[in-house]
Image (cartoon, rainbow, N blue to C red; front, side, top):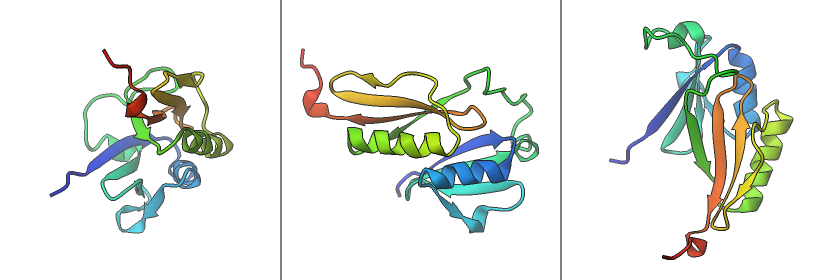
Length: 135
């Protein structure tokens, strides 16, 4: 069995979050979507669950981090090329995301930073292991 990952993100405005993630290419799975949560499909193994704050609090007794001020987690999403990274970021920025840090090129890896409208952090990058420094 292949493992799947469900990234659960608290969002302040579910419709806005759904529109943002749809604009960057994630598809909604209506089977797991209602007025409190939305399942956005990244791939067969990766899903982003957008949860209203009330719904998110059903899973924890901890306070929800103010991700506009505090980093709670940084998710990394791979891309097949540097160009795909830039195309993804162009969509994200046009959809209301922001780029909290400048792009980084390490030779073998190119990555860019993304914050969604709620401040949840992502890195999008391409790695070329053939370019990885050898000892």
